[in-house]
Image (cartoon, rainbow, N blue to C red):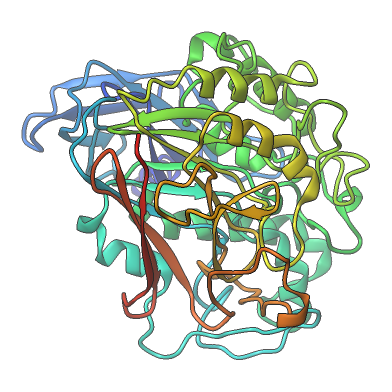
Length: 496
């Protein structure tokens, strides 16, 4: 009996904890368990000794290849920018804490961390182990004593208030490459289990961050399927490991703009492709047109954030990279009609009140301003709207190094530089670290005509800090993960 009780407790032990803002007076808490929960419940309060309030849901979902169930609960009637303590109801849970969002219009200075393209750290991913990887220009192992990006962000958690991660998590779709190189043990027939194991390992590692800080996300190409861009391709992936299913399962109900009243009744078991479509299309019923976790927006203090999807749903007949005919896979669409994402962005940005949120910050995955491999269809789909509505900063990853491109519009540098430019400032930082290492930039003679203002050319892993100093000044830092050194810093002035 004791063994049975221990097993049951293990099955409901919360793992992979994740938090997201749902406005300044609400927070969403997600976690995974190895067993379905009939009523996921969280106790919370402003003291770890007085967690007398509770919130529950019936949101406990899985998909065919997953070993875990994703659970989500929404906490409401909270105070803005206030520390709360929480305990997920389970025999083996511990007390965690978080701070709610600043209310829109709060112009107190704050700092946000940005990270993109981050995978498993340790023996099954990026580590001190040195091994060549066919097809990559360069692979950078860690040196003994180096902090990983997750470790660096944990160690400096007091320096920023939340984290933005626009795409590429875990790199579980590199399982076959890792298997062939001897990074991991197993057989190709065990691929579905290896893939899910890598996802579990990554989100367990990430929980040291995402369980205590709001962690706002959108999709990248490596969430799409079990063999993104690699032979034998998506067609060989089982149901449950295609069409962003794992990403949707963890994040669709966690990110803002998908309340349970919109999702409505749905099966307790998502069935891969159909389940993913059902969840995302149900979310599209939102009056805002948001379909999180792919595209949505939120406010934090003096800043309005737009998260957009560079993988699917470009609208206006433009084929997105991860859609059928896009050259990568055959995923999406997730909107209920062709132009839903574009219409959402237009409506969302047009509604921004600059007296309340003077800064507008947009984040997606694939860059169109970058040293090489620009996503020209992304530019065609999104750039006109970002220029039209005066977006201040656009943040990307996808390319595995750090690049500061500067203020650009229609492939032309803004002559005012960082002194009140009318064009958005573009940044690329896909250097958080993962199994595939870093990328070398193209040779100087092949750089785009607009040039690169600053870059770390595939030698260091890192992240960004965005310091919103006041309604007119934003300091942008590129930070080395291994030692916390600020590699590059620039201050943007905008006369809002």
